[in-house]
Picture 1 (cartoon, helix red, strand yellow):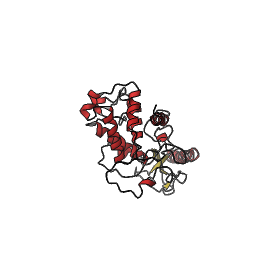
Picture 2 (cartoon, rainbow, N blue to C red; picture 1 turned 135 degrees about the vertical axis):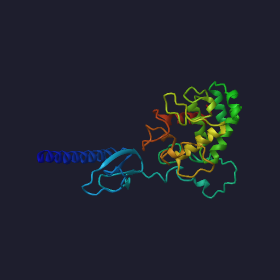
Picture 3 (cartoon, one colour; picture 1 turned 90 degrees about the vertical axis):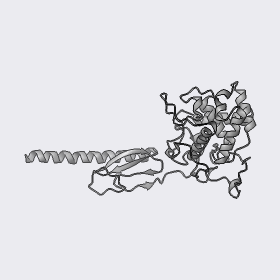
Picture 4 (tube, rainbow, N blue to C red; picture 1 turned 30 degrees about the vertical axis):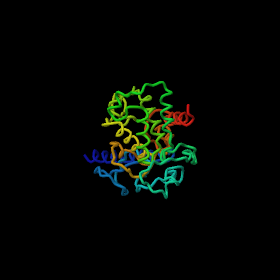
Length: 296
């Protein structure tokens, strides 16, 4: 009987040792590879803890978290290797708006959106007045504007549609040309060949996760564009919204992890997050932006 108890004790100690070795290996892997995830620690009772006493059994799970990492038997600390992008481009409030009073007038910016360390296209900033170019680029695609479907949502023609984009973008200090480019990419120039239907007024695939999941439906064109703008703002900054939140997925975003168009793609985002899973998502948006500004 005592022999059986002793054997069980040895097995228990052995399993605890294996778990600790596995925990250390996982933490070492995270540290060496720079994978932007965190480790959540729990004690034997299943309660989340920030510190573990020596001798306690440690349970760990990996979670998507770009801000923190956990070490075995240690407290959670801010990731000391996290790159500080706070002074680059338009991540913080643009200088031309620092002393400006927002009196409801349209904000027009001649500032270069790529004037930052990387030459990336910043999402936050005053909208360059490209409404004419937006309409011209859309018409150059040989598409027939779906006026019958979108007029019920308040946008009977492409001019009205682009005006709504600029107005909603300016309300949140998001670049309207980025909103336009993304809406065109996501909907196939308003042809809606994906999971979301045109009657949902969802122009950015919000809530569509593949496999026929249709995503979120909005009551009209303006609300759909507003949700897209707010979702972009969630990714691009930590600023509060200026209008009532209509983006149901706003709180799911880790804020300020994609201040640039190029980082909206999950595969290109240094934090491992982002808007879309497809490869070169940001590059496709940049191509539309380049065509928009070149007038082609």
